[in-house]
Image 1: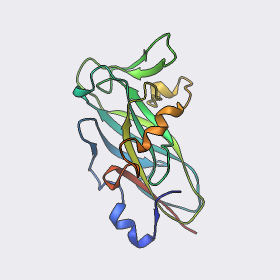
Image 2: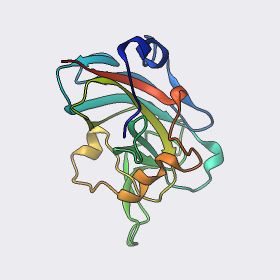
Image 3: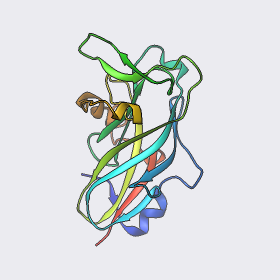
Length: 188
């Protein structure tokens, strides 16, 4: 079940204002969200698959040597729909393999320098039911996730299911309104 609302409620949960950033404290920032190449709020004529792209800056000095992910999905769902960034403390620095030769080997970024903004993209599926759907983001630490930068997308990667289950870890209702990065309005 998704967290749908009426058109009159959209002003309370719409995405970022132009130039604003969504901030996951001490983890990452998101900006320049586009749904199907348009803005962060789009009206569509039915459910289906829509491309989501945005810039992410992951900078988590307190994360130690953990493998971190940025995951996205729709508010009210039980699981995230996609993992879009996978890496260690800082985004940027190019493609690497982490946990090589183990069951949790994955593509990632492991930037030894300052964090860099990187662009990621994925597809989200929106129900074919009329309503307003909030697109949200949060972090995970599930060892494996996809790296959906242009360089990462050039290499086939599975969608790791464990990371998608982090949607409600420590947040029983999933990411809240402060985690909204976009809005898809399904109209007749």
